[in-house]
Figure 1 (cartoon, rainbow, N blue to C red):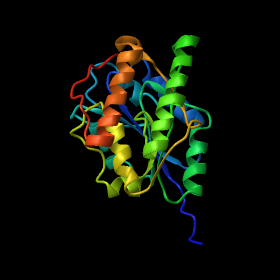
Figure 2: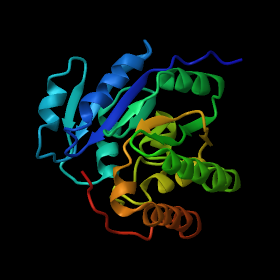
Figure 3: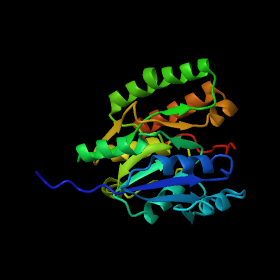
Figure 4: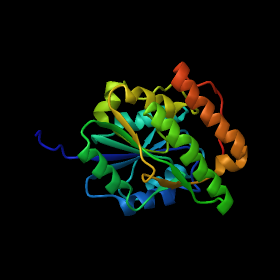
Length: 243
């Protein structure tokens, strides 16, 4: 049996004008992190508010800048700046669960062929009936789609093995928002196992669902996932920054 490789986790948080959420996000990371979390990197993606100053005020957090706008460009910058052999990505309006890092350690240490681990969001600011609808979406639509394709990544809640990300040449920085995670999942599936686990969740804001509406938001995500699976490219080119 080959020797077990020591996992070193780099946490990467893309952020654009996230002064309302970034502090709580980083506090949750610092509270939950395991001893093998080697660094926490925030990628400031052209913020014009106090995001950067909040990050600088927190000890143990590294701040870098990415001038090219877009989630893929910000995540790619975090990838190139990081040193860990496992890269854990969370959005700035999210908070990790208490067992988030323990789950990452367990899955990657036990499965050497695991390329990427992802899971669903749990929204912190929805009513009970709305959360029930979201749960139905994950259970009745998203998870069956994963079982069919064998790949699914939620962009604000995933961990990836560095070697796998290097094998696919990182993120596609031509994709600025919609379809970025589906593209990543599809390409990672070609080099290793992509696991979507319902128990690997984090807590996040429902601001996009509230602003755009449940049906429109859900339909847009589904359409771009299907486009990536069939056409190997997203179909929605533009998006609105909601803050």
